[in-house]
Length: 254
Image 1 (cartoon, rainbow, N blue to C red):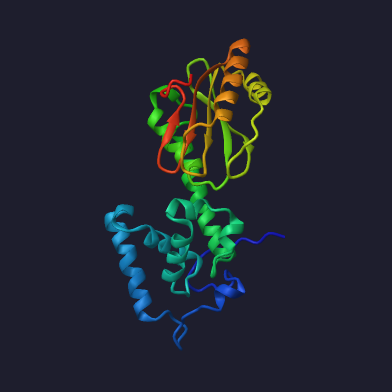
Image 2 (image 1 turned 120 degrees about the vertical axis):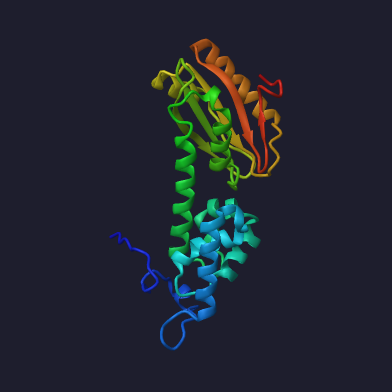
């Protein structure tokens, strides 16, 4: 059975036992004034200045306030940043990895994954059903949001119609930290099912370095050749690293 819970500062039912054990309520059942004041000031800074006005760990605090309303969340926010490196990597970290962090339970995981899903959906909405080649920056933003912080390789195919409008964005495969299985036949089969006229390949390098491997180059050429036979043009293959991307077309591989 699945139960859904709302979030408020008065609900204890959200906490796993380890989370509830770290409450810092005063004898009257309230958060100490210094924590209340900190939360109030941080929320005000965010409202006035937006995300640019606060560092990563404080943005995480704002999210954690909802998951852990009776706890000082600053130490947990710092632990998450120290463990994963930055805000994006915290939000996109696998659930199992998140649960290894002291103080992370169901409520925290749920809030982080809601934020991740919202970020993906917003970025995707900016490119789906729009001409890709005239909104290239939005496409790159979407690819970064969806893939730059993943800890394992993922391979996606973006299918386009005759006007280069994105009609489908589909994950083709997931792999390990340095390998993902790609099957050109399956990529093309799906393209034919969708009636696609072109496609863009995208995958990530969890190492952070988007330099293509020989295997990347070889499979790209296989897909290009298969597309040429079937009338599906391969526009590009993007490799997403932590802080930059490589375009096969820009680099002369296509």
